[in-house]
Length: 250
Ligand SMILES: NC(=O)c1ccc[n+]([C@@H]2O[C@H](COP(=O)([O-])OP(=O)(O)OC[C@H]3O[C@@H](n4cnc5c(N)ncnc54)[C@H](O)[C@@H]3O)[C@@H](O)[C@H]2O)c1
Image (cartoon, rainbow, N blue to C red; front, side):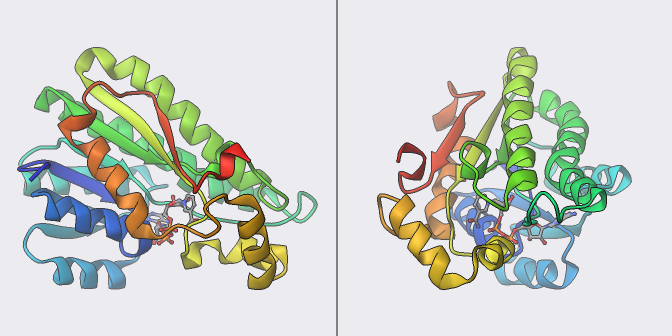
């Protein structure tokens, strides 16, 4: 029970990487509030996981909605120890095709969302005397590719926002770290797979780019969430941790 009695809010967790993290959190004894824009799947996931999990609808790009999520979560959990911000959007295209509305939406969810979550959660983490904020970035923040300019830039901002916040909050014993998955086998990547020309092209890219020769699975990212949420990572802050099958090193 590495997370016994930890009170956790995680966004973007009705499926895939986030859902696997929730499963791992509750297996280690945590109580979890899932915040996501997808009410239908969120309600189902909370039912599936049982009494240690509650779902609250949130649009992370909207400040009132984020404030409500944190308020509801703190009431239900009785405080807050961990904020995991995993909600994200992927948009792919050439620089000539992107428009400003796409830019604004992508950055509103992937970057402004993290700012809003941290802003409203930090007062509660301070009250707990220590805390952990875990933000999901991407391999794409460090190593992009054609079609990924805006997504890569947004995830690069996640890393610099997080490491700077880590420095700002360190004297409150609040740690801030970033998880950077490489290619993980979820439908999230459909826009970039389409841009690349389909799954055959993507698979050929994965086998040439990833030393382990395959995509990761959500359950292979989840243990990092547990580690960063737990006191086992008590001396780690301002880090961006890759789980990418070695792709960044090639
Ligand atoms: N799949 C990959 O290869 C990969 C690689 C690197 C990083 N990531 C990151 O991992 C995270 C999870 O990705 P995933 O692959 O599990 O896909 P996913 O689609 O299951 O996760 C994204 C989640 O964010 C939610 N969301 C989107 N907009 C929202 C909003 N405005 N407010 C609240 N919730 C919103 C979605 O409903 C969804 O549950 C994302 O941040 C993504 O950028 C994924």
